[in-house]
Amino acid sequence: CLQGLDDDRPAFLAIDPRYVDPEYRCRVDDLQRRRLGASAETPLLWLAFVRVAAGGDSTVNLRAPLVVNPERMRGLQLLAGHDEYATDQRLG
Image: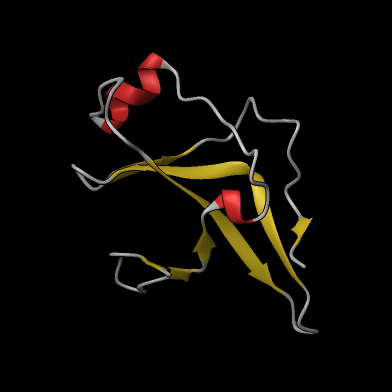
């Protein structure tokens, strides 16, 4: 669970996208690495946001993952360039 720091403290359920697709691969370019404060050798944490519907069906957004540099606790959501993945991949 990711907990926001804003006054309303939003919370989001997220999982490692490799739990859904063991072959999951996304790239971070040099600009994104600089924004994260990460070198090419820095291990990054990848998370995909989960949506739980009222009926109990759950989906995960593999197209726009959150990538975090755990050394600096800085993250960003990748919003483009991963069109091969679904925004609503069903969780089984």
